[in-house]
Image 1 (spheres, one colour):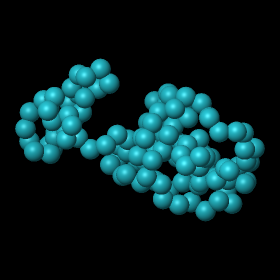
Image 2 (cartoon, rainbow, N blue to C red):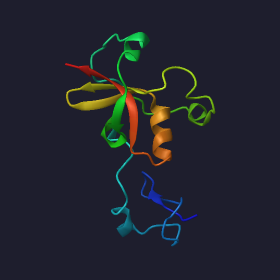
Image 3 (tube, rainbow, N blue to C red):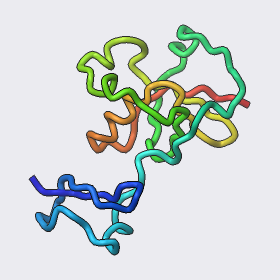
Image 4 (cartoon, one colour):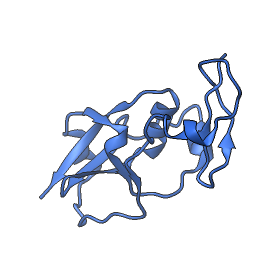
Amino acid sequence: MPVVTAPSHRGQEVAGLRSDGGSPFISPDEVYKLPGVIFKRVGDGRPYPDHGTTLSMWAELAPRPVRLDELVTVKRTLDLETLLATDSTFFGDLFPHVVEWKGEYYLEDGLHRALRAALQQRPVIHARVLLLD
């Protein structure tokens, strides 16, 4: 399989699969040719007011497509065990929960599902979106 590489947050190159069969590392000039980031931004906490939406209220919202690169996460960390668990999508809602507030889309619940989609190179997920005024 071909190798693709990406810079880490410290500017170091990280080996992966690359499509052209070339070197497993990229030059600094190639960094700018890489596709966009997974999420729009990694947040730390919920900047929007408490909405008090229950799981049954979330279930009433029809899922719709949301681009990963438009999402702002509300968690800075992810439990790797949750991401890699074979039943991680079995419990709870099948669709991530997104809050739309002041023109931003905040990924409130389902970070592991969104990251799985990104790892499968899917730029869009289906999520339940709650609009806050």
